[in-house]
Length: 415
Ligand code: HEM
Image 1 (tube, protein in one colour):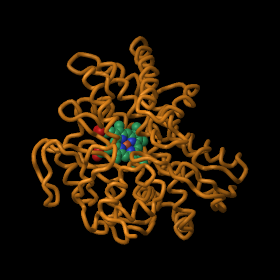
Image 2 (cartoon, protein in one colour):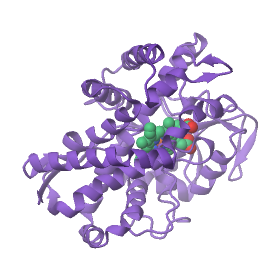
Image 3 (cartoon, protein in one colour):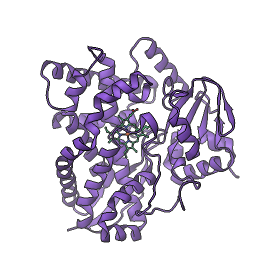
Image 4 (tube, helix red, strand yellow):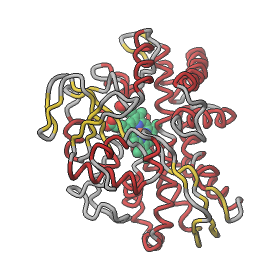
């Protein structure tokens, strides 16, 4: 039986769809072709419009006065939307950059922005290279067979981010668990519990941990990003506790699963396309292009949402004030109108106008850092990699938000 556009639309609200890339892309291709601005009414979810074409997503992201992030920055079950609304009313809701709009967003984003500019990135390069080498050594120690996701990829980006924030290494395992509980919230293996309350509890643990960090950095400022956030002042006042904790949360979480998913998904793509692996090993100067192709290929952020501030239209379809649109980045990154042969993994793809980092005022703050981390790891790995193959069946995370491979069993020889 063939899938209808309504079924395809509803499948975007089902975390299990993202376990099967073929099924996901079949649904997205159908929507792009037949109903690129599609109203989705899925059980347990408030209605939303699925936007699947690259051009429409860019147009929406460009106009951040018409399309705002609050009150619904990402897809969640109606029960979770309701809980968020209650917490907002109490002033206790998570308020990260992705929950904010101008003018507040611009001011708060500026606090961290310097830490992610090229100059700061260059200063960080030696530390990242050192970590990349540490993890390739680890791969060698594991003796030729491992689960690349769980034993290597999830650790390295978290170490980078937590080093940038200035948190002690002894806290890293706890942070790893909490970020997985937060971002893997829809995956049975990773989640803390099944109810919205249990998942909110993971969020509160995060808040408590970072409130203690804030107090310590205000008492004794240090030269790290955590201190810059804790001691930032807007109109002469510190950020509120919720705003400070939210800042840490977005940096620690956004910088982690995204990059680790890209590193693992990139390795999987190289295993599946051995001609591209050989080409990259023989032409290491293609690595910057290969990095962006891995990011396009994996697209670890599956969606963000925007809400219309007035009646408008997208691609000729009327959308009323207060209605929300889901921006499907995996779909934009396979759009036939933008990419030549979009389902071909091509490490030399140029140009590569992917939207994996979004677009406009919310464009990923950590894009330069993510690219650097991926490049450093492959710079350390590729010259030592003599052979690699799958040693089992890869598994993906069930999530409608951020994710990718959860297990990647590999067999390899390193020099
Ligand atoms: C925002 C993707 C790595 C920090 C975003 C957005 C996307 C994204 C799609 C939303 C953009 C929009 O709404 O237009 C990715 C991908 C990554 C990655 C694919 C890795 C391959 C990182 C890293 C950090 C980071 C390493 C570093 C801490 C952020 C922050 C925001 C953000 C703070 C919010 C920006 C804002 O709303 O102003 N990212 N990200 N991301 N990302 Fe990343």
